Image (cartoon, rainbow, N blue to C red; front, side):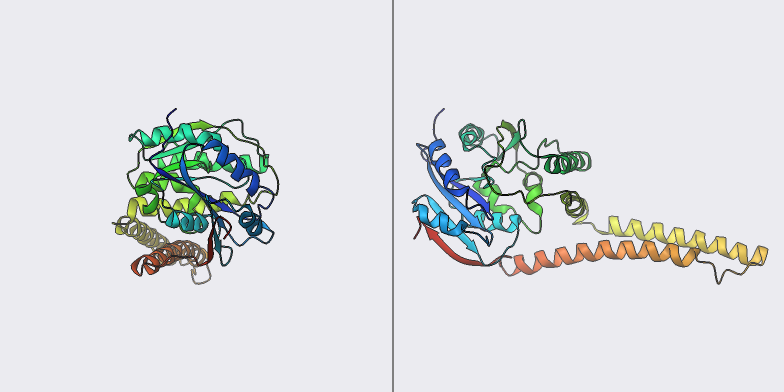
Length: 317
């Protein structure tokens, strides 16, 4: 295996309350990437423990610490690290030692070959609890069925991106779960590679069953962007026509009941409740989409980023 000695690598690692893991993780990365030029970019998402202090105390010249001003979530922490990264290849991974840095060199081989823009891991023999496995399996199944993109493990954080693809990713909300899909929509060629998976070394997991509902909401937004972003009338127009037809049929039915049978329809809840629930659902869905698009327009049109950095330190300084 030939090291990528001529290319700078950027390893972006979002961390939140990982004071017991950062030193060991740094040591493992250094051992695994001997012979490579690389920077380890820890993005501290406003940890409430001693994580920032532990990173600075290592005084490792390869380690860069981005300290965010408040807790923004994993997606924006990744975005901050990717924006800062200087490497030709950008690698993402979790900070809990469940990803194995020893898998990085074999993944880099595929990226350096020029055939692939993204190399993503498939976790083998996962060492997670059912609370994490079940939502992950449901999410992966839903993404495959709805998007027709056969990614076996969307939740694996260990990925290698070419610089161009990584820099073009616009991560908002909870979109880190679909980062491979976002890259695919940008035209990336994707390679899936089996990788090792370890039990969490220390600390507690930040994921639970509520993740499934967030996945569903984010996937609906992605589907809208993918299919209807440039032709929203095909979505909202069809829905509008269907609702108009439904309303006409209901009114015809009520007219027949009123005229033909002499029944009083003024107190019947059919029309009121039916239309109320349908319109309320459509309004909530469209308001969510409009707000998401407005947020994207606000940040991108002004070249702003949806996060604020408190400080950046290199090698503990």
